[in-house]
Length: 290
Image (tube, rainbow, N blue to C red; front, side):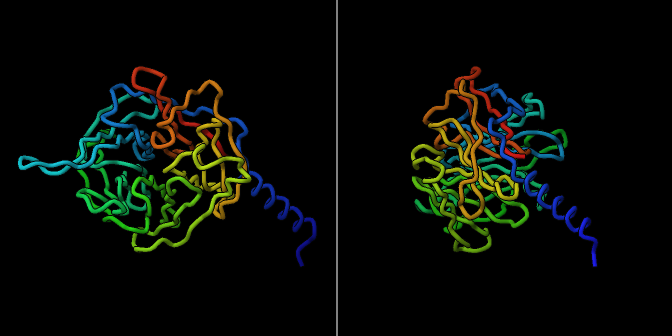
C-alpha cells in the first residue's frame, strides 16, 4: 500500500497542475506587435506562426476569385511574412480569399481556409483548405497545394475556423449567435455543436466576434472569443461554459470591422488587429491564458 503522504503529495501536485493549466490573465499582456508596412489588399484576416522558421504570416481576405478569358479565377488577396520581432519579409498572392491561417504540425505546413469553405452560398473556384509554400528564409513563395475541398459541415460561409492539431478537429463559429460547429474535414457532417454560455458571460451575439473563435490548446480554457464592445477576450471550455475573461487595454480603439476580421490565435497569443495604430494598422499579440 502506498504511504498516505505520497498519495497526498501526488494529489496536491495533480491539483496544482490543474490550477496552472486553468489560469486566465485578468489583464491581457502584450507579447508582440506587428505593424503592417503596406496597405492590406482587402481586410487583414488571420495570423499564423511557424515555429520552424520563427516567422509570422498575416493573410488578407475579401477578394473573391475572379477570372476572365485571359486569366484563371484567383483571388488577389495577399499573404504577408514577418520575422519573429515584426520585421517585414515579403508578400505573395497564392490566389485564395483567406479566412483562417494556421500552422499544422501534422503536415508541417502553413494552411489557409477560404471564404465559403462550406459552399453555403454556392460553389466557387479555389474554395477549401490549402497549404501555402514557404522558402528556406521564411519568405512566401506564392505557390500552394490542396489539403481539402469544400465541406458543408463548416456551416456559415463567412466562418473563420480554428484548428486543434491533436484531435485534428476544427472549431467553426457560426454567424450571429453562440453556436460553434466541431468539424472533421474528412466528414461531411459536423461532429457536434457547442453552445457558448453568453448569459453567464453577460454578452449578446452582436457584442462579440461574428465569425471567429480561437482554439487555445489550454485544458479547461480551450475556446477564446473577442468581446469587441467590452474590450475583452472571453474564455470558454469545450462544453461552452464560460470560464472567465482577460481584459484588453482600455486605450485600444476597436472598430466594427473587428467583429468580422483581423483575428487569430498562434504562438500562445490572441492576435487582434488595431487599425488606428500606424499607417496601415498594427497587429497585437496578447497573452491571455497560461
